[in-house]
Length: 454
Ligand SMILES: C[S@@+](CC[C@H](N)C(=O)[O-])C[C@H]1O[C@@H](n2cnc3c(N)ncnc32)[C@H](O)[C@@H]1O
Image 1 (cartoon, rainbow, N blue to C red):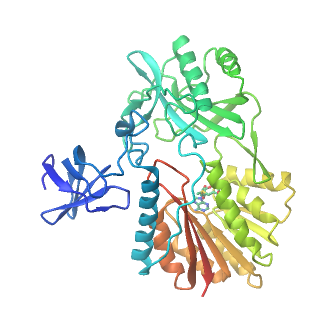
Image 2 (image 1 turned 90 degrees about the vertical axis):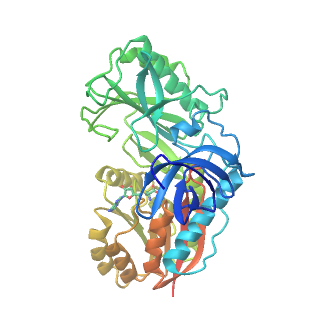
Image 3 (image 1 turned 180 degrees about the vertical axis):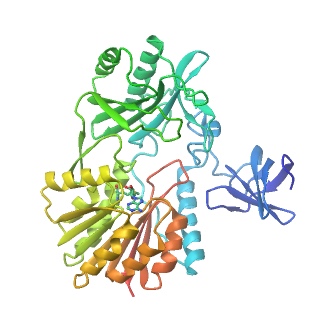
């Protein structure tokens, strides 16, 4: 295959990222957005030693699973990958991807349960990070096209229940619209990343129960006439607080180092499964509340079957899960690398009256060996919820040394889950693998894998 060559192929299988995979004269080509069985005309965009990539020019014969995407900019934005397939099919693709990854890495024929779904297929995201740019002299909200700095403005949604990005809801959109209208009315500049000039960079907005945390990221020290903005947001009649984050650097990192609360409380209080928590714009929270609760409930159901062991909550974030687990455990030890998250986790343990939680601020790989040594006479239960890159080898070795009866691995990346299971299954058997549709309309999936000592 040559770059820019126009090819016609039939899609044979689905790749790890949900892309269509075809072969032409023995050469493998990955085509984003193409479905199994489809005949596709495509243009080659990249040629590598062992494979090529191509983009769809025309679907010559469409799959019966292909549907019209809800979002008018779906094919240009790239924030979602699965709006063009029927929902049940997207679940089958995710389930098959998990099975393929684990079977290949662990050399087994595993059973993957059906994907657990929530009530919302759209409008489920509790947080968005939205760049603001000027288009034809007017400030507009949008997204960056996937893996690029190409700005794609939103198109107004006709469905008032959903936002202009249908992954967030209509109430979140009211705040976004009011902020954009204010920027235009006050003729405030927007950020240009090439020249590092202009004021407004991003809106980072999050719903915590019924309150919105709104953070406007600026390349400057203050927003002119911010009181007018606050007055305008108040007319929406939904509780909110407003922060201004100063980010003066030429960087892809969205939030700056300095954060000021200009309206409402410094922290927003929330509740999940009876655990009270408080967060600021830096705090990590799972993106889909309903699926988070389902996963945490499964973890607790499993923990309840044990005889109140010491729980190691590895990669514990702000500690909501630690607190949910605390009443079924002798002690919970959370390990988390971000200091602010650990500060939050300590407060959470206090406000929820859980004196049996200890939070350690460190890299799991560094802290775990010492923790495991001290627990040599204790029954342990390990919960792992790492970032996409999965666990360091040292972490897996320390977990094995802790010798827990049960391990629960929560993963947002089937490939690294499978790699880590290849090590853990030397000592543990897989009891169950359950996918959760935390991110509908995208290729992403959360997986909960239960393991028991051999
Ligand atoms: C997927 S989140 C899970 C958070 C938490 N379990 C929850 O459900 O909200 C992963 C967490 O791991 C933390 N983290 C990333 N690398 C780490 C490391 N090397 N050691 C400890 N924590 C780490 C991140 O800051 C993040 O809070």
